[in-house]
Image (cartoon, rainbow, N blue to C red):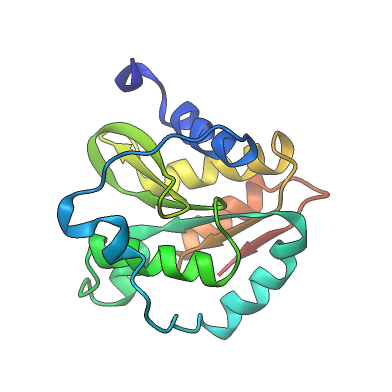
Length: 177
């Protein structure tokens, strides 16, 4: 059934989990279990621009949408998916963003989204028919209107920033970092 859902509906379902008390979890591979991903290490300080953008999100229960491949690209793809997942979980915990971060990944065998309760974040895969950018751009107005929350999009992609700004709803905040 999940494979027949549109990417937009899948990501919306993941976002709705943040606003509801219900949450499901999926088992992580043994090499990235909750102990390793949530290992105690000093959290890395986010870039100053991201820090400023998050100040406005904290009182509004805003949602953070992360363009995973763009973030990995900024590291020259030396940052692997597993490492990014662990770092994002630690970062979200440190910034009190538990349940409000969605990592959006290009590709995947099918469009799917999972809320990882142990890590306090969601991971969405765009599938074969669209990109992570497409998913993120579609979700900005949904989060702002339907969930009545502010949005922070983490990407270095100027095209995605422009698309998100064009779709943003008046009365809600949009930060692109």
